[in-house]
Length: 546
Image 1 (cartoon, one colour):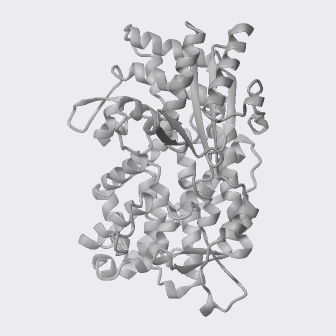
Image 2 (cartoon, helix red, strand yellow):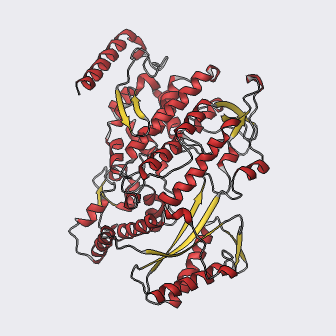
Image 3 (tube, one colour):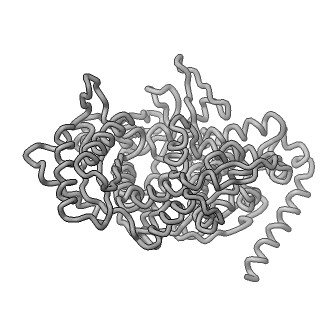
């Protein structure tokens, strides 16, 4: 404790001395910004102990963001939703993941800067990338992806809200605060220059289209000569970014799941990257040495496994659906005060960030302790009580299938792609109709899963990454992609596994279960998802037995 106090004291004293020495530089930061991290200060303002990365150095002035209400709220958002009901040790939060993501972003951009000075990566670039990684998740709602992917979509099917949009709004809110703005002015400039850096941070988190139809660079935060910086936090090009690296390592460790991507893979990727031109796209990207392609492939493989056995584990999904039902029932009764004193329903808080910041995973306790005796709140509390008592729907039948094997189906002379939302609606409707006719009065739930390796589910991320040959001289390095025939030998043909499942009351009779098996098999055969000669037997999904 004493050493920690001494560390902070020494930093403050050193920073004060450096500020005095720099004098006019701090006053005229818009002309020449202060280097970051401060070269006059050898030690970070804070060391953070981390179960994944050991110790994370936090450099001034990032402590102003970490200590804000917007960032501290992440402590109250679980990283993996309801997975702790299956993996009890998975109690970690978005707070710890965000710190880990910042740490990796700082290390990756530092490695690029040190390995290739010609890139001209500035202190501003490093700080902006670090801020983006640190704050990339502050826009998550209660239970993270359940909020925007399910709750908001069920309240409004046309909703386009994403947590990245929320993060962008909250970053604008953070840097409008006088204390935070003043802390960052010496490092990010002032006026229009400062605003451009803030725009860059938002773009790093939620990169939109980079070029127009004519191939002209249209992002505002940085010019095309710095295009590779957009690959670090949220990589829309090939899906390999520090966000994914941290959550795979952290979630696998705390759920005690063995994945092929590990710390050794991470070190090899960090040590074997360069910036090269992507001739196909027309701008520069981060490329990796051919020798680490197996490590790159392990990222997608690990993501698919984690979605199968953790993020979309059947029991987790069943519990999530119960929570969503409880939240939908309680939505009219859970209100949060906005910036002008107006009250917003839970599903409406995205319209006011002051109200939004008052929401977190504690909405469960709000429902349980709400005084309302309305039918909706009574039912919502009953659902939550069932979760606590482990009285949850049980998996009765499931089927895995490959969109590549059965890419399209025909319904009423209309071709429907299996990757589409239309297919999910069609298969769910067909099963619900058939089961309701065969088993009237029996409650059941149809769940679909899309287990892919990243990107859009149609492409292998490892097939989109840029590679180079380390045996060639630096001036002759050319970026290339893995050829499709080589990718076919290195990975499964289809980067996606889809599955459909029926859940029902755990107290069903054997006769009712047998009837569900028959109906499910018939519908799967009708859709071409199961061969008729195996219609009475479901395909074993041994990976789900984690």
